[in-house]
Image 1 (cartoon, helix red, strand yellow):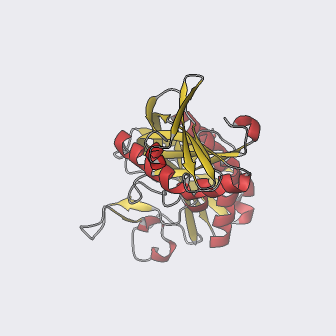
Image 2 (cartoon, one colour; image 1 turned 120 degrees about the vertical axis):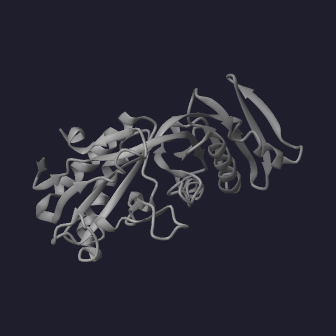
Image 3 (cartoon, one colour; image 1 turned 30 degrees about the vertical axis):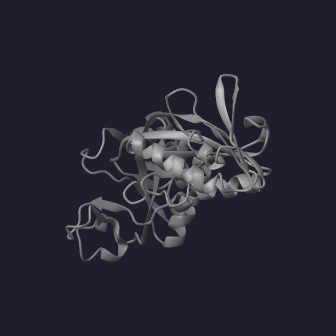
Length: 298
């Protein structure tokens, strides 16, 4: 398959089951809602070392938030329920409770309830007040700038992590420009996040390493500087490879995000140095969700 001069490899991305939740952060203005959201989703690129994968889903207008203020929807993904609940609580306590003018609300209805502000209320040292509105429990916690309003719980649902595709280009600037174009379009798709910095990862990995202590190491087959030293998957003109990783609430959500992202890359085309689109997989052994590139783009 070739789209605008870009070869779409006959391969698939491999993904695995995760648990996910969404939270809504509001503040006096969009600036402070975003600051809190960025803090809460920091150091959350990969479950390999961060404990969770998190990202900003989208900015919310005042008419989309529970308290009628500007807001940001964030999503957190983890491998298990216990880990997700711990990451959510810790990040909310350190990054939202502390952030000026912030409030915190559930972003998923249904699913299994997990604590959002349920335990953060104890920071109020006995001065906290519970309110029940429309069947939902909220906590008002006194803080120095006024009060921190938080919903007690949010929903946890089954999700999918690890959808991905690789952009192979003639130069580093061309690969990055293509990924930036893809991320801009993918952020328009609901229910997905791209957890790596700016949505892009340059250090794609393979399973295992020559060092016994490492479970993952550099994907040498796609490293341009190793073409003469390893079994490479790169042709001579490829000098840069970058990856976009996607987590989504459903396989269909990731399908949509991959489709628009790959199309954005192909729109730049071979004329802008983009040669191939490929994907990372481990022979189908990592996870049960397979995203076949040519089927997605058919």
